[in-house]
Length: 222
Ligand SMILES: [Zn+2]
Ligand SMILES: [Zn+2]
Image 1 (spheres, rainbow, N blue to C red):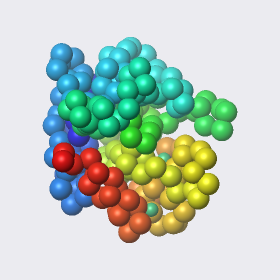
Image 2 (image 1 turned 90 degrees about the horizontal axis):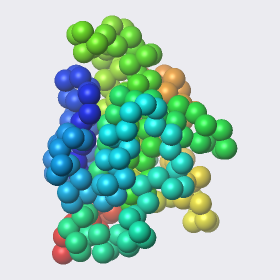
Image 3 (image 1 turned 60 degrees about the horizontal axis):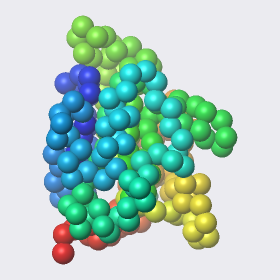
């Protein structure tokens, strides 16, 4: 797993590192690279698309059907064989917009099964009064950083869990966990995520933990 670090503050960077350090009990190795590093996308699935998104200026508008598509339809097996199996999670301070139920709205993050994820700190910075000089949030800084940590875990969950639905028809619509005390449950946006999930300190439920572990097991080199 690789983090692309654009203009994050040290506190934001630490929150992201905490998310990865605790992911699956620390059994996941990860590497950190800056988006301007020419080797940043090396070994990373859909890395070229992730880099283009992170290097662009201004708000990111994401069409979740086309976001982080495998390059030229390359199957994931092939990407893995070619050593491009690392999952990329991008961090940006630009606002992120995605269509939800046909309506575009600002999101904390977007993550898609077997592709990759992007998390934006823009909404958290606004909500918690980020001060550029100190690089810290003025209000409830602990809650803000905890929200970032859990948002990274949630979006990685989407990359690693296919669907909770039985129909298997639309993984994007059935991407959330039905358990009401799980980090992967549906939320209606940043405020809801913070108040209902972050403040209660929810983590992955047992089923999500198992699904993620299975997917990571599949991804280990043979
Ligand atoms: Zn989600
Ligand atoms: Zn769950």
